[in-house]
Length: 386
Ligand SMILES: Nc1nc2c(c(=O)[nH]1)N[C@H]1C(S)=C(S)[C@@H](COP(=O)(O)O)O[C@H]1N2
Ligand SMILES: [Mo]
Image (cartoon, rainbow, N blue to C red; front, side, top):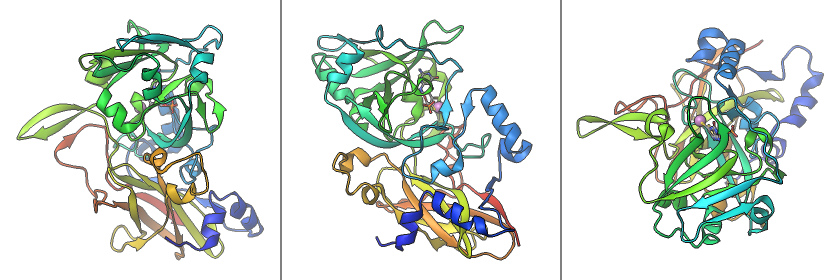
């Protein structure tokens, strides 16, 4: 895939934003207003205050149009409780495997490390209530793979499922946060016990000293402040698995409860900034079973679609010997679209297609009900000044 060199060189946009300061009248960026959800009803400020109240902080849009989202301002979603873990007394306990085991931080850090670059996305990101799609980010996660940790504990043994427990005690619930996945899912996703984020030790708010990261699976499973890995011979059916992160799906005429899992095919225009004599729409595309192949952009409410320039994670990290293509399987692709509009109000959106020919949905799937895994095209309203 070939792009004009300037497009690649100027992401994520700091340089151009500064260069264009010479122009007097025009702003450096335009606000992309969601067309539904809290930001539409209450405005952006009140919406983000409300979200903070329920312990969500959205990612600023610029961090969603670069290959790695900076740690500062990286989105956050938890239950307000951020335990402060003492690195000296921290222990990770593994039970229900061949031999079981306990790791202090030094022992965990002594295991061979691997890297994953992947999207982290809250299962409810971009649903009808939130409207905006800021509960996501993309970082490089480093630490021993879950497979390595299990091997050091005699292999999975009889365990077919795992529950991951965090140190954040939640009032009224006996234990801390917990979430479970099957061994098959964890292997397919190439889960990792991350101790570093973008090359730095995990910060307290993102799970110091260790958290689970499961590429391609929604981030309710990315348990922070990880204290126990529990091997089981049956699925973990804790409250978050059973009741919290669930949708209803219609199967053979019956509505059944399903847990949030693999991230569906999505894209969104995230950021609009000045670009010489016009504007540059930038965003990302992720999810689905196959690599992102193309992204189209509409700036007229869907009447016409135009090819965007795509930068795949493989292209972006081509010279990074530390990352294999497999380590990038859960990473988003970036796109840019040079836009030369007249002043006015526009309805813009992006639509992704993957290598299997799957196209991002325009409407929600009528056989799915609930707040999770909403993959439909995300519309934004933007006013272009004169
Ligand atoms: N221990 C613990 N881990 C947790 C949570 C939590 O409340 N406690 N929230 C989960 C949810 S719902 C999401 S979306 C991600 C958010 O990760 P972040 O806060 O690092 O962005 O953490 C997950 N891991
Ligand atoms: Mo979440």
